[in-house]
Length: 174
Image 1 (cartoon, rainbow, N blue to C red):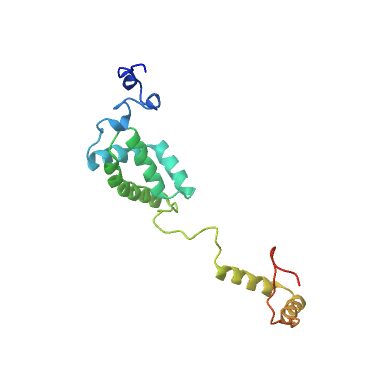
Image 2 (tube, rainbow, N blue to C red):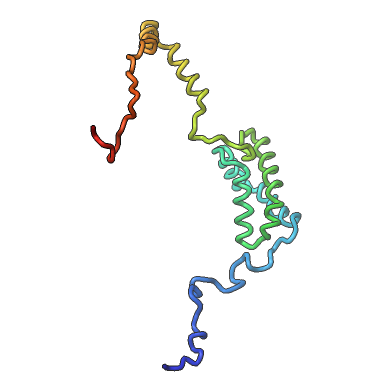
């Protein structure tokens, strides 16, 4: 058997070519803004920029929740290495309040994103019943009476047997 002399330990680690050097990414370096106050000094002047303000108002009019916008802003800043994640999480409520103030000042209806939304695909039974009632009231009198007569007809009696009904692939035929 040939001796390896430990040469296999000197090779690259699997996946090593797919990673970046430690400290090579912006979020792996010390942040530019360390405190919440410093981070707010970065964010708040952006709200006075007319181009950013117009884009923000357009997005708010589209119904995008303010929580989503604020989360996106702070996530982008974390990835750029401007501040840490924990500072970003502390800044989010202030950003939401600032955007709400801007929306109120501009007279825009906005979604804070704080309310729980019901399942949008599911229609409550009460709404379905109300819609059916409204449609029935709009029907002409003759059709309404015909529909009521159809539901009032007696169903044909079904004979019930004491013997069990056998069905399926393995059921015996008698």
